[in-house]
Image (cartoon, rainbow, N blue to C red; front, side):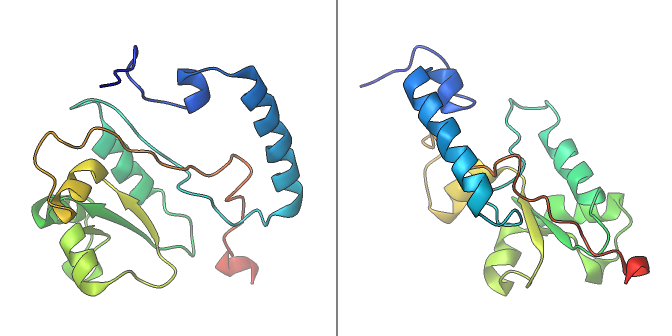
Length: 159
């Protein structure tokens, strides 16, 4: 069984440096930046990793609070109790829930045009796919490039 020498958290090029691949990737990034629409994302703009009690949920709540004008954000949590606690803490009325459980998302489907964030995605995936505790060992997530997602939200006052 292959065991990495280091804990693999971060960019593949940080974990396993390869100058040839890095040079090729830089060339490809420049090409993509010229051709692709800047408001199209390859993946999430933000990925928060860390051990227990480091403040991941706190940062997810800050992301929810910092919703740009004209945008709707939804934070998906592991269970409804946490979602209700977050909504209550933020003073969000019950019918306007901005934090929901993953089960609510599965049952009701996504809202058209809403931005989604996930808290404890690893645990959510384990529940959805019925993976026994402690057996989820690796997640790979494609993130948006720094130049992606640079669209400006329409300001109602400017319209």
